[in-house]
Length: 386
Image (tube, rainbow, N blue to C red; front, side):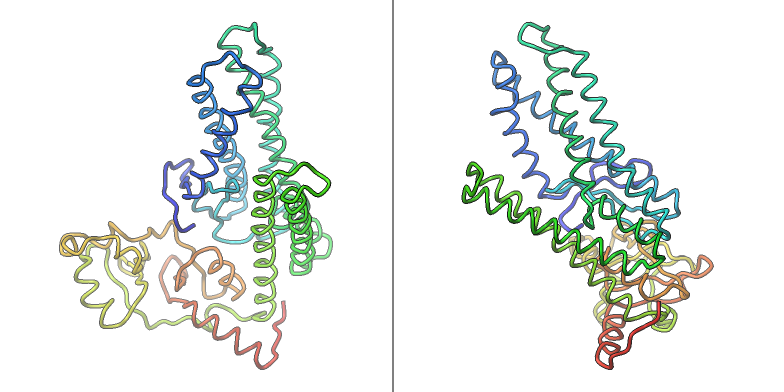
């Protein structure tokens, strides 16, 4: 996700923070320190309240990471590669390099996240009950009970929210898996689940308007704007899923091999950035170049990667220091359906996808070639078979 920085790596998966996460983190800390904890423990000092609030917020986002890790580890079990987990304003998202290969894989992957949140929520409530925190309790009991009393319910809320049967929420994925398994038609299942997501987004938007203008509920501008923002995100995500599925139906049985190019330029990892820019980027107007060792792909270097290097360091900086490693790249094979390439292009903002066969780089699939092909099929009214 653009605008993100890596803060950790767990089970080989990058944990990133998007800049929007900082906004919601401080909003959460402020809300906890201004109302939640002062209402329960009014004798706490302002400093103690703020520290406990900050710790609570960090633990909450740690539980969001656990939720997404559950998705990711189950996805790996079904041979789906996961490159990263990103925390942003609306929670967390795991970046899958491919869509689930079967309804069973989707069902297990989708259910893993909410189940993890439920386990954390129940554990939090149990700890809060055991601590029995009140005004006369020991200081450490108050802190443990207060934090657990916050984390328990909030994780259960996260689980319930994610189980709403609307794509791309986990509940929508469960619904898609069920319909997919029954009908054997993934396109139809995606359409139903995505429409459910748009319906839920519409209800959230209506609730946001109600809170903004105090229609039937106490006026709350912050809550109204938050509902509206979430509704906007869900609507767009569901619409994007519908568009992706429509494009996949257009290209039908077309394979990657029919559109890939085998005439491409590459670079070894030890070449200096300055030489790469002089010999390939500028004269050939290349925006992305595969980095290879023999015929094995080791990475991809883009204009964005090169721009991160100061010009005076170009002669001394090898490409391998700034490239994206092959392990983090979405790839396709010549026999993959073009719909799979569309999914991978949707997940990564890259101008091309490396085409791999028998562990060798055999070609490149350019985004422009796929877009042009799809447009041409739409213009002549061709629909592919799925």
